[in-house]
Image (cartoon, rainbow, N blue to C red; front, top):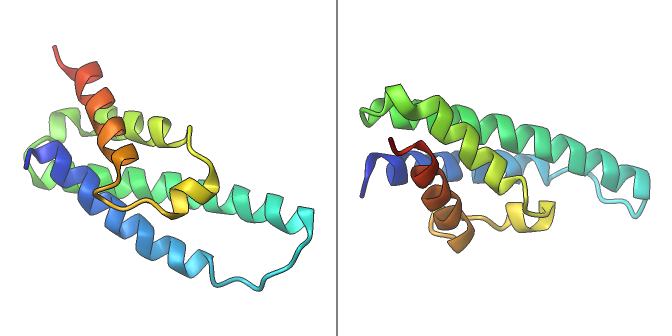
Length: 108
């Protein structure tokens, strides 16, 4: 496992735990509620994924590339729907694709 795989995998686990708490909100069929939930979820997901990724990448010796790599991963995962992001796991193909894209972008 590379330091980037470890960073994204650890970040994905933290995000999943945080999203479980977000998903515990009261259910309603209101379009306004869905819009508000999606906005809140996306903000929380992005911040949590980014911060966890940077911490993990730094701990695995990639501090010099952490910000660029983790910002790229978040941007790649932003292309997914909220429903897809809720289902993400560290081993998801979408996470692997984001990681591969971002590795390629930060290589010298």
